[in-house]
Image: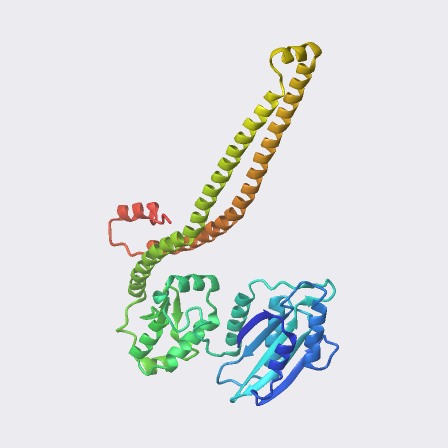
Length: 424
């Protein structure tokens, strides 16, 4: 099922939408659990009322469950999907409503949970819920044996050799499910009626047909892994031979691996250039913010220094004018007034110096706080870019190490020791 979720408020508006009989042929309330009220409007009003004890504005989580176009989901399948989503999102035990809609010959469902933990009186945080729902959607398709949509397939209907950098990174994060591999082979088998057709169908999905040492027909993926066609297509070896004929005119496994290595190496070179450009582009705005912040901080410190010096000169002049000269000054010295005034001036000068130092310290503290906020963003970006480079370097090294020996052994050894040029 395709799962689409969002955090939201608007209890009455959502209830009106879900119970709208004008736009739906049929509406069925499959479940109202954890509410006092026995109708959808009342249940959502309860959720809104409880949320008033918190600061949460988006106090509900709404999820739509959409089966494939050609499949009619059962109530049990909707309940199973809702339970798995609840577990994955961290909403287990929260009040929820499940409403089934039927229109235009299709059946889908909506699940709405309260995000408010009534015991703790706080909203439940839902980090990365879009990624979690995407992964669960993919599992549901595979569990039920439904054909994966392109948006959920790791390799799907496209060869990894044609991946963009973004698609390649996503595939690395997702991994590859054996159920998806089997589905790929079965779909390729169903759409072809000859060996050349099957070969092309597999290559569209990133697999290369070859002559196996013992199994007859095999296929290799871009990582060089070998798959027996009969096993992964769910067929008997006899059925494969009857449809495809003899594998004798296909390249051997070793020859196919050499072809794949060459293509992957060229692809990796392109990825290195893209990663460099992408990382430079990503870092540009933050580095500009850093330069602007440094310029701003230097100007603030210079302005403070200038103002303090101006004030210090005025204060020194004012203290100096307190000391009388001439006969009056001589009289002040004889009476001890001059000495007392000097001590007063010295004390004031010390206090002013401490005041100025405190102002400079406070400015530095405030500026460092600003700088640290920016540094957090820089560190996060650097960690992500380092992770990207590590994955890319690993794949490039694997590609280079699998290269066929077409130079002298010394040159090959020297190249492997030197490693790929990944100054990114």
